[in-house]
Amino acid sequence: MEQSYIEQFREDLHEFYEVTDKFYKKEISVAEYKSFSGAFGSYAQRGGERSMLRLRLSGGEINKENLKFIADSIQKYQINLVHLTTCQTVQLHNLTKETVCALAGEAFEHGIITRGGGGDYPRNVMCSPLSGVADGEAFDVLPYAKEAADYLLGFIGKVKLPRKLKVCFSNNKENETHATFRDMGFVANENLTFDVYIAGGLGIKPKMGVLAAEGIKPSKILYCIKTMVEIFTQYGNYEKRSASRTRFLQETLGVEELQRIFREKLAGNLETENLDIAVNASEIDKKGGTVRPPAGQRLIKQKQEGLYAVSYHPVGGVPNPAFFKELYDAILPMEQVKVRLAPDQGLYVINLSGAEAEKILEITKEDGGTAFERSTACIGAAVCQVGIGNSQALLASCIKRVKEANLADGVLPPIHVSGCPSSCSAHQTAIIGLRGGKKQTADGPKDAFAIYINGNAWIGQERFGEEIGVMTAENIPEFFVELGRAVEKEGLCFTEFLERYPERIAAIFETVENGKV
Image (tube, rainbow, N blue to C red; front, side, top):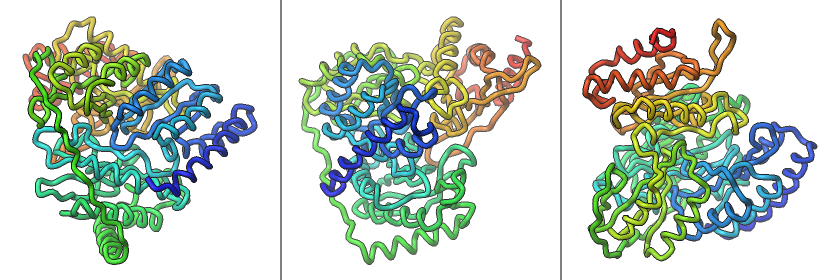
């Protein structure tokens, strides 16, 4: 990271402290504060009495120093709510004015930047969580994600974007980071090049990305990013906020014209700029060992012989805050071990020997467990200013009811629950997605969620889910029980059931919502 803008970020914190003090003294409104504080990765929570702070972690990687800072901060400030986000960041919640100001500065001193964590800025750069260790990957894309992250930080304070810009990297077809439908996505190819997708995104009027360039050498990725920033600032909508994301460029310019402009500008930048990068592939020379396979699929064999990754998915992406200290203490003596955040609100501990994997499996045993319990949910309306539905409460009630019904694992998939149309849980490309809202009933308006079926993020199969209707929140747990029973009765997993009997899902929806169960 260049020293010039590190020092600028440090100076910027003084303004954050001053404006935050004004907000808590009620001298400025929630809206005024939101338009300012997002630039520092912080927002006031619903009610305006507490704040959150988003720790930007490039590529979702947490090294031991980062983990120690998070664990120590939780203890020092008695933080009682931590949320793992779908953009591979850690959010600290329920912070007082004094705590959020202290943490913004202390995070910086420990190598964690919050600048640009929200607001109209380049956001945390995402990366496939098992990049570098996944068997069958095209190549390790994490070093390039980190280079991109450092480069994008250099635009903060120098370039005014219409709105946020999300950049990500994918190492395989699973496409966990949604590289083919983000503002900008780099998809790794077996021939050690990237295909580049632009102007995609979820939320209101979602769009799949546009294939803008193919066969880009990894050393040339910063030219592509500069090109995207130039296009967004030249053609992005600065007047109408609701139309200020890159995906709307597909409408204003047209797909073919957008491709032409990108390729033309990229060619010019390749001629005039000096942005080549060279990265050193990470070397893992650790010796492994065998491990007794546990029940379930939380143990993953790495491509490095004898090494393992362990997955952990706290329900709703909300781990017990004390977990971070326990995890840090466990991995401290383990060589080359790191933590990677996943876009589904889980995490992986990687580069484990057999004996080390056994220890991590033990301390992560409170994992969600079943596929359904490993669902994704945004923080929800109880905390988020703009939330409509209480995503966390809904997911908790669904899991409780499904457990009571004693359904077999696999008859229900992981679901993705968003509290509003912003699609923070990526409900629009989930196999089952839910989006918070309201529904008018005979008893008046009630909390409700639109339900989407059959979305897919896999490269080559990308599609948005189809909305089958809006269901009151009170009926949704029973909907999943009835759906699970139908799948179980057929002796199938949910994916097979969906392929064979797609019409039955809508029928179950109607039966439950109309009170005919």
